[in-house]
Length: 97
Image (cartoon, rainbow, N blue to C red):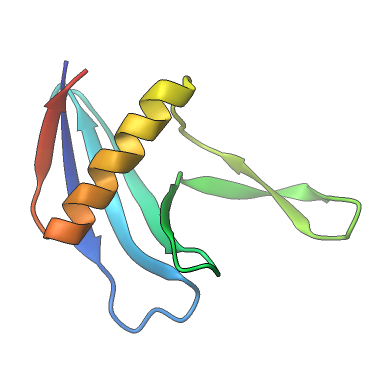
């Protein structure tokens, strides 16, 4: 299946989100608002679209649940690599999975 990745850099973001991605699977299904986030250590990673739940953790912080997500570790790593490649190059990327 062909998977297309399109990213867009965000300007003036003060919450660590550097960009967003849209991933389209086989010209049939798309996932939007995958965030490209910079960690406190300066590394980039992808964050899947999520929603805030009504529950909190033991420290009182809000809990979030992913809306869409890679099922396997291998696919998550591959998808993150391609998304970051697209973000850094500024170009759309396609691959087969």
